[in-house]
Length: 184
Length: 193
Image (cartoon, rainbow over all chains, first blue to last red; front, side):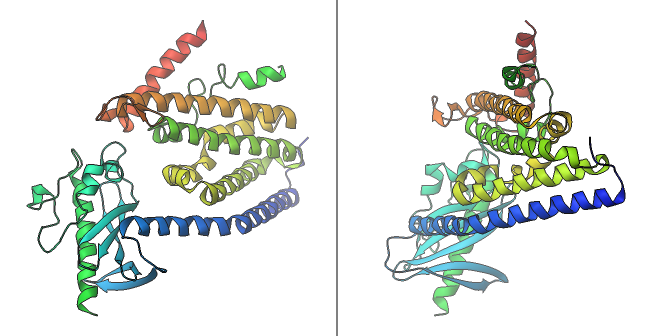
């Protein structure tokens, strides 16, 4: 039968359980923290490889402030920049990595994290027709906005808000590139 | 109850989703596709089995008045362990389920089995109960996921059999309620026979 519910027993059992649980969590964390860091690292490396042409050496993480917003970006020697840009999408923050070559033209884009509606806005991660239109986009020649807003981006059907956010993130990244290239 | 009965009752007589109607939050939210439903079911099963084992072991020495906090701490520990393991070894799965993994802590099925079964039964029986209810939950979620994926995206386990979109409403929350409701009717009708 269960031990008596007096103060001593209750405090003792709760303390013991918490101690044991903390010890378990601590050891699991110690074992997994390495692989977790590696998995994150691998994801970043894979994303950079996708948004930029092949390059030699290690990309370096730097940050810059443009129009009052801080941006992180990777500088890849000889290939360009991979800018991380976060905007507000339909369901929450939408974070993109945008690769921009040294000529200022978008090389490729990839979604790092999003919370868009499955089947609608979430298509921005799978719909090749939508993603590929940004490849080779020259922000100086063509306006980065959906057609509804007077730009040239073809939006995903029924997901104008997500498409608008995506285009904005790409445009922001191009602004970051412009800022970087003008200040060097 | 026979050992075999302990496992099968989770599938039919005490199916957590269609009969007990517990754990509706992850059921409705994560079953947008068959794969998501399956993964969520397996994640819950992992926590369910381990927490059932530990709770049946410690319940004789835990004073009655603090058993709920003790169980919650045990369950939360296993959920965090699961979360760390998933982040480390299957980051893609972790990303799709994301928020719903920590929510397993408050899943009524896990605490419900701890209270109703594991705290009163032996370790062996509690393990079997965890396996049974876990399989029942996983199968239910997978079935809901399959139906929603077929209707909503025109595919099964990511394999597309029609080009273009399905009926998008089924991928979103209203479709989840519809599918769950109809499956519940169907399940109870068949189970009654």
